[in-house]
Length: 402
Ligand SMILES: Cc1ncc(COP(=O)(O)O)c(C=O)c1O
Image 1: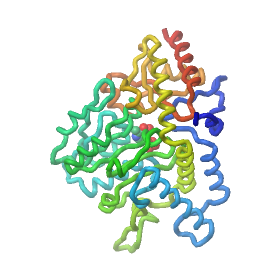
Image 2 (image 1 turned 135 degrees about the vertical axis):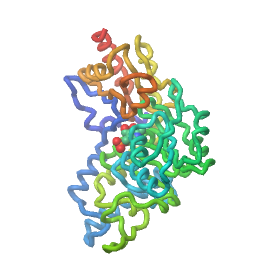
Image 3 (image 1 turned 60 degrees about the vertical axis):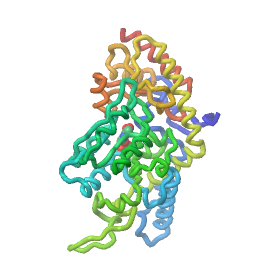
Image 4 (image 1 turned 180 degrees about the vertical axis):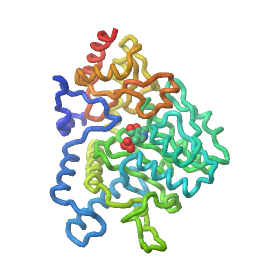
């Protein structure tokens, strides 16, 4: 199995928590980092640190070359047509805010609607509200499937954009985004995909999908925090005004007037997080060496096994009950009447790290009429033994909670 020996590459997995071996099942919040990514960061600061693009010296030239090489690597990783369509940001949140702010300035007229799904992360809700849009959510059924029959009727002359998550961070649902994109385009409406929970688990090809924007974070795919990507197709990016003003993004500045740099620099104001971008490149290497399909297959096995084991326990209610192949590595549940926070805290005492609460998807909680869930989420380094440890811990605490 390709997964053999992977754990040894993640030093943090050796940690003991409250006297127990750590079982890290909070991967949808952030994945752990392999040694090669950690080494890339320390190596950058030890041997390469320089500000990019404008230095006349060796370090600046070398750092610039490596930074721009990662842009091409990302282009290849997501199947973009040009490296100029890859904009580095601080993460998915900043990527979506960038698009919302620029898109609204270019296309909003004062009476504007954005179609989202009912399962969006707050990062794909609030930026559109801040930009002045009214949101029209696509509802989803009890099992966590989007109700596509309710999607098309949401379009009208005020619809400016469709902004939908590829994978739900709360329910695990893999949304039929190709269909969603095709329908939007048939109405002449562009589409933004929030790929925060997808890129670590699925092969993404933005040209095959035909999306106009695709946003994701490095830290959810084995890379560093503080770096993310906003992919935008060139036709769209050419039309949008810059997001932030500052150094790098200009061509010429006078006190009367500024002209802007070409793509992608128009959208990258100020000093970027160069070391983190290099770390992202190394994370992509790590994933590609394993093979994204192999990662997906391993996680699918784990999800199937964990779901099956969890369902054997009395009093468990799972949220997001689609067949495993229609889900990514997320398992959300409640235990009887226990508050999710209590379950999470007790699991932590036994070394099991899960997330509890609304997972920044309050509308999903409202949809089910619950305060939150307990969420276990898997990555390539998790094992069936860890699932067993998680289930055994849960059984123990269920006795305590009775
Ligand atoms: C679906 C989804 N979108 C957006 C985000 C925001 O990502 P970040 O905090 O890395 O900007 C998250 C993070 O959990 C997410 O799960």
